[in-house]
Image (tube, rainbow, N blue to C red; front, top):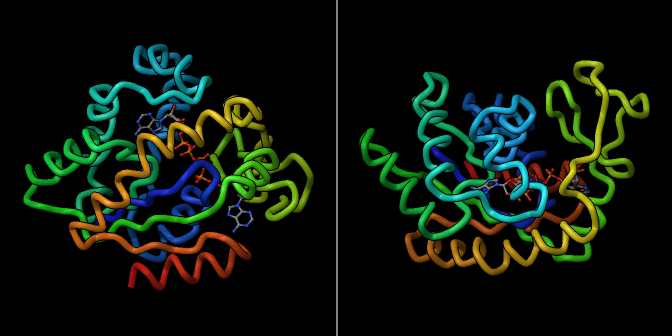
Length: 213
Ligand code: AP5
């Protein structure tokens, strides 16, 4: 199963990919998580990306293509993946097609999670993420059992540097201008399923799973 999750910041891409990956037996590949790990580790790619990510700008396509190509060549992604955060523009979509073509594969499905801007701001301003394992939480809609502590691994929860109000607004604008055109691109190719990403986490998860089956 080779799947792309599209959607604006805060649509729930990470939350749902993380929740369903084991049921489908494929890894959740998040370019945002990969970039944050590279920034944290201070790798050359991380140093190049740091300022752009913190400002909500897109990282250059060539750097992203190299990162994604490497990750998709790992053994656990050989038969499938849930790709979250990539592609983010038409050039990246073509790069992804090329990567898959070299292994004689192609995307099976693209899910577009639909949510309005007001809800995005509400979600991102309350989001917390585990610093150890990356598990996602929300202070109101998905709180941990013990405040500030990850249910899964006991690690500390933190707010992302790009979840400041001014950066959230810019990330939404970048999504609408650069990434949203991919919805039409994949619709024309018959790969797209649009999923209403509002409502409870359980209700959205059911819609996501339904769109993948
Ligand atoms: P990335 O990490 O991909 O960020 P994003 O696309 O902005 O998406 P988010 O992670 O903010 O949101 P999400 O949809 O995963 O929502 P989540 O599940 O966490 O990218 C970060 C940056 O890296 C980019 O800005 C860019 O700089 C760079 N980058 C990454 N990929 C790139 C690429 N391909 N090219 C160039 N640059 C790239 O949910 C959000 C919150 O809402 C959580 O708290 C969750 O609990 C809550 N929530 C979710 N669903 C619900 C619900 N139904 N009801 C109530 N609360 C909910």
